[in-house]
Every structure is written in structure tokens, then in C-alpha cells.
Length: 333
Picture 1 (cartoon, one colour):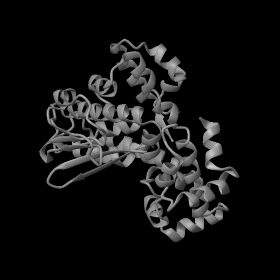
Picture 2 (cartoon, rainbow, N blue to C red):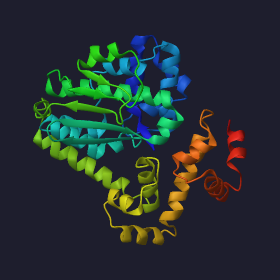
Picture 3 (tube, helix red, strand yellow):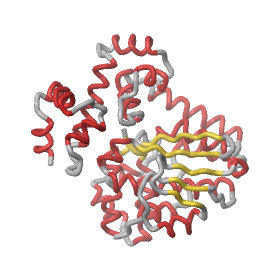
């Protein structure tokens, strides 16, 4: 799981206007500038998640994610970005974002639907939000603002959302209202941009059917190449991304992989593993990641992973590591 390097480059370059030098940000983040010079390069997720720590430290701005996002003219990178820019309208561009957004960052899942209004949900990986809540908030604010600016750049018109919903506590609401120009709702269940149907029907200025077909073919080939990974590896990523306080069922995971549960079981058997084993690996990794956060108690980790009681979690954890949760957490802090 990682983040496209050029997204980080855009963030660092934009942050220069806040007095944070590009080279300094790279150094403080432990990122080599070459890592973020090519849209094909992916930066490991935790390193990418923590880029907001030096940004916050250098700026002292509690809304640095929002302010950097406001200053980004558009957020379109790599072949997925070219594909969106050649789409016929905003509606189709947002569908492309949902279909291929994981190729930009598997740690964010986009969900888009249109009924009486259009709704774009930004679902951050739960482990990210629990382990690094402050950086996750800044990343979310950045995406909300950058996406709205991107819609403007694509259509040539300022699109004012009907409302913005944030799954975070209130923080200087006037800054959000000033930029988005709409109702801002905090402490909601999801992070979401709600738009008018007529706004998403607007044509994309750079729409080009022949270019769309070309980029669509390239992106589809790249997606197919990614899918040549082992079934176990692809399953593990699905379980991470769809983790919502419980591990998805084999039926849900198979659906996300576009195969039947029986076919999934057969593939895993060929790779000498099982769904239960992979699910256990994911639980173990989430538990070990969360233990690095001193604010999270072992009982809370047990609840997050969906165990019925602490004893059951301790037993499972010891089967994974041959150690108790208490001993591992103490060593990791």
C-alpha cells in the first residue's frame, strides 16, 4: 500500500508558499526527491502518511491540509489523471476516479453515486485513521479542497458543493466555509462532497474521445498487470481496504476481486494458503501497527479487530507472535 510520488511532490511544492522549503520537507520526511519525480513511483504508505507531520511543525497551521489543498490548482497525475482529463464530463471523470483511484493511493477508496444529488465519498483506510489521526485529517482536508479545485479546472466553472461532510471534529469552520462556500458538517459518519446533478453533468474542457480511448487502454493494461499479483497478495489488500471494524467475509472479498468465493478458495489453495490464514495475517498486521500508537489501549485494539472479549484477542495474538499483547506493546513504545 503506497501513494503516488507525484502527489507528494505537488504537496511539497505547494507548501513552499507557507515557508516550507521543498528540500527541507523531503529531508524531514525521509523522502529522496527522486522518489517523487515520477508518477509511476509509489512511496510506502506510512512514510507518505507522515508527510503532514513536518508540514504541521514548520507551518504551525492547524489547517495546513486544507490550506495546501486550496492552493493546488488541480490534482491529476499519471495515466489516471490523463484519463480523467479526457473524459466527456465531470460525472464520468468521477466514475474513473472511483474505478482507478486505488492506483494513485490504495489507502483511499472513492465511492460515487448519483440520485437526487451526486455524492463523492472519500474513505480513508481505518488503520491509517487510528494510527495517525492528525496526519489523516490533514490528508483528508487536502483531498477535499484539491478535488473541488480540480472540478473547477476540468469544467472551467467554479463548482460550489451543496455541502461538505467531515468525519472529524469541528475546527475553525469559517476557513472551510470561506473556501467551499457551502454548509460544512462535522462529526459525520463519512467524509463526503455532495454536489448538484447539473454540476456533474458539465463537460470537461479537455475532453477528447480518441485520447480517452488511448489512456483507457493504457490504464486498463496497467490494472491487469497489477492483478497478476498473487491472489493472496490481492486478497490481503482488499481485506485492509475494506476493514471497517471487522474483517470482510469471504463473499465480500471475492466480490471485490470479481470472482466467486469458490474460485477464490481454489486459487488460494493453489498458492498453499487459505482465507482464514490471510485474514489472520491482516488482523496481526493491524494489531501490530496500532500498538505503535501509545494512546490506544490493548482493550481498544481488541474491540477494533472485532473480538468478543480481551481473552479471545490475547489468545489469537499469542498464536500469531508467541508473545502477549502487553509485552509487544511495551517493546514497541
